Amino acid sequence: MKDTFQNLLHTLAESLRYFIHLIRISIFIVMAWIGGLKAFQYEADGIVPFVANSPFMSFFYTKEAPEYAQYKNKEGEVVPKNIAWHQENGTYIFSYALGAVIIIIGILTLLGIFNASIGLFGGLLTFGMSLVTLSFLITTPEVYVPNLGGPDYGFPYLSGAGRLVLKDVIMLAAGLIVASDSATRLLKEKRA
Image (cartoon, rainbow, N blue to C red; front, side, top):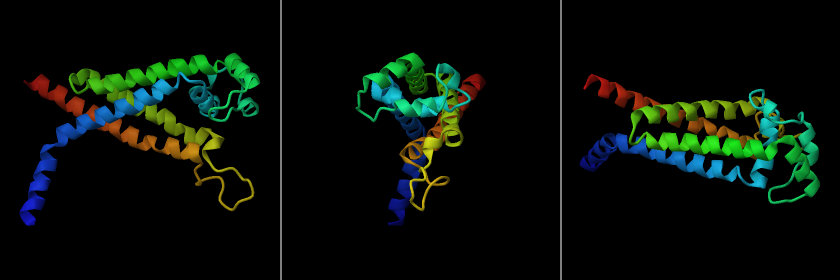
C-alpha cells in the first residue's frame, strides 16, 4: 500500500506540466463557450447589470444604471420593447465585441501549450479579465440576495449572479499559474 501511494505521488509530481496544459485547455473551453454565448440576445441582456454598474465598463452603454431594471428580459424571453431599449443602449454590439475579446484571450492562453510568449500574454489577460469580473462583487447590486422579506439578504448572501462571479477567483489563479509556467519556459529558453 505504501509503494502504491509513493508511485501515485511520483506520477502526480511528474505530470505537473500536463496538468498546467490541462488548465490552459480548461481556460480555453470556458472562454470559448462563454465568449461565444455573448452573440446571443439572452446572454447579452444578462450581462447588462454587471456592465452598467461597472466603473470600468459602463461607458460602453448609452443608458445610465439602474434604468436597465425596467427593461430586463428573463433568460429566453423576447419582449420587443425591451430588445429595442437594449439596441439603443448598445447592449448587443458591446456583447459581440466582449465575446470576441474573451474568445481571443482563450485562444492565446491555449496557444501557450506551443508558444510560451503567447501563453504568457494569454495568462496575464485571463488574470486581468478575472480582476474586472470580480470587481462586480463590489459594483453590482444584483450579486447579493435582495431583501424580499427573508432573513438572509445582502452581503455575504450571494445570488445566482454572485455565485457565478465568485467562481472567477479560480480563473484568476489559473491565469497566474499558466503565466508563471510560460515565464519559466521563457527564462529556460533564454538560458539555453
